[in-house]
Length: 196
Image (cartoon, rainbow, N blue to C red; front, side, top):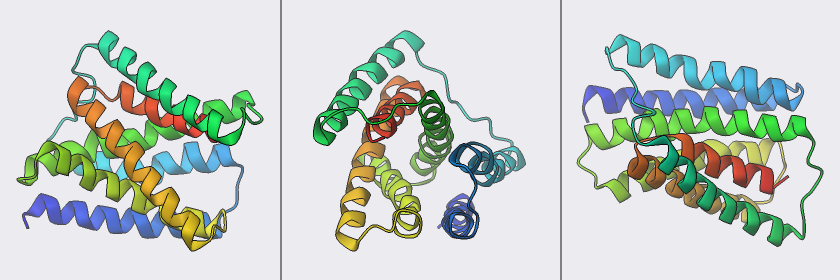
């Protein structure tokens, strides 16, 4: 395992443990936890790491119009699926919708924007395997939240884990095909808002 992959493993262990402990011990309004603290805990170490290796993230290289259209298509499909499966739209307060947008932005910056390109560059994995592995990383970070915050049973946590792998895989493949994180953010945002 090369130096960058070791750093990635250390970062993922840090993120898993720090975010889990934070969500267990700290109980603030959702917008403060998801927007302020998530940005600090998730992104600051990654950006510091990228600066230390003199690497500029390439987040918005592809054509924006095509990226937005793909994001609207796949995001709209997933939003519709969640609304249908829940029997309608829940309480859509603008604060919740905005919080979900910023959550999606932070999480997709982290995984589709920064981790996925690093995994593909530093390993010999194919694109679909890199997308799947990054999706597994993404889903793993969310497991403790289901258990600690939402008190889900093991079967539900497994279902949420598999759903998170699928959503992240779709977001990652959109990121690669458009060379842009906009559709990844839109897909996750649609899933988050559809599950309110």
